[in-house]
View: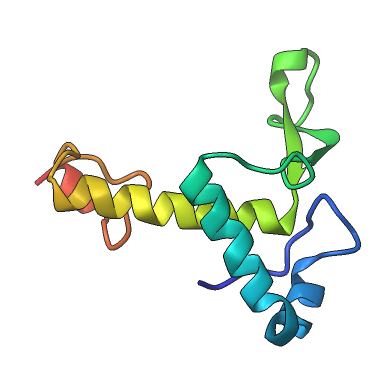
Length: 116
């Protein structure tokens, strides 16, 4: 899994820091993620986010609907969500439960496949 050095909700444990100390924190992080997947529960400390100033969708916004909020998640939450997404994708694709034209979140799919 590749983590991008994007903004996160917590300044203490950002992606760059986590990559630096992964040799020490990798196993405890794996245990935390596996425990979360096994129990179906996510610790509240992980499910925190920071809402940034909304970004306009258009050049001169004059309505609230013309803004989109930016919600920054913690880096550990991003990792957990990536793992869940990968497992869900694998489950759905193995059982052929996805519509053939679905390509929005699928890997190795192109828009051209939708119209063929």
